[in-house]
Length: 172
Image (tube, rainbow, N blue to C red; front, side, top):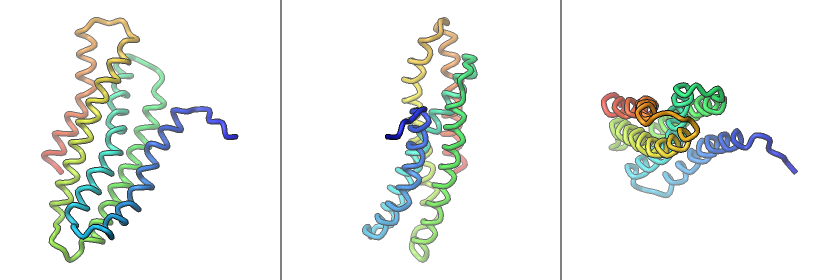
């Protein structure tokens, strides 16, 4: 029987690698069975990128929180950030390749891809900010500080999500 020594590391690997391996094959299957290219593109991008972005943005906010509270146990967040960025780059490249391969000669332009990518970043930032608010509430209970300091640290920790969302609106 296999014993797992570090369950958090196992969950982290499973959480990132399962979508990266599963979604490209699911996307090809959906494309072959769905005659509507635009709905295939939006469901493909919205689901696959959002699934990777939520834990990535959550780990970014928790890493900033641990810096602000001077917590020395940041290894899990570093691993989550590195693995999440690697998986996000791979999945975005895979989706971009599938978009160009399957939509060549059709009415879909790159603007549809960019709009779906922007929406997935906005949804990912929104969902991860809600999850982060709950996680921050649990995390900050361990420290005895006043309400104003906790609020300032929360706002500073959640600010990268706002910056990512604003950047996604104007750049992507």
